[in-house]
Length: 173
Image (cartoon, rainbow, N blue to C red; front, side, top):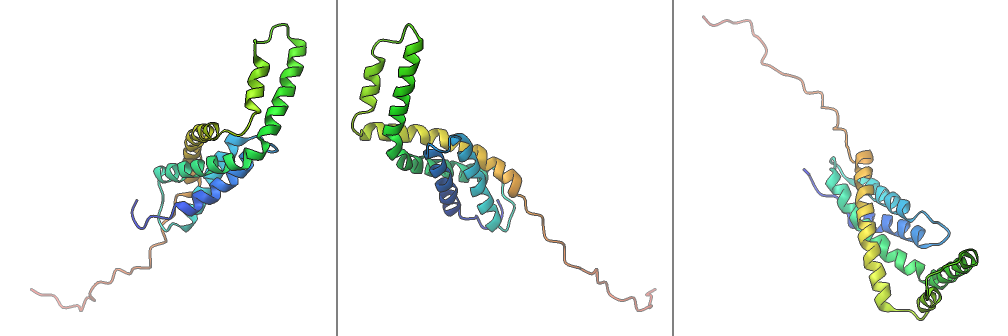
């Protein structure tokens, strides 16, 4: 990239915050699309402030950062909904058990373990898992965003006159 590099941190934080909040809330169930959308937003913010054309690699970089920030925010936002999600899944499995003859043995104890106290190890494992997935999806969204917003049209050339020395009409022999 020629010229000054645009700042990637602030657009990635903004895109990651939007995507992380929307994907962490159980009301909005399109988490993968939110990440791609957040990365496109971050790409737009980077391209808007850049005086030069940006490449797909720039979009992938800001998108990956956006995905990582979104994973952190998603983990924090989804904490209050953990018990709600486990209870909802348990209710679904109980209804499913009414209609099936053979459920795997111990499926109910699996839910009881999941509904237990908060575990920092599981929280960190989930965070790493989502950060890896969201970084890839964010890179994809960043590439799409740079394809949409990263190209700058060069400014029109200034009216450069081809000024040649005036012909005085004298010829040298």
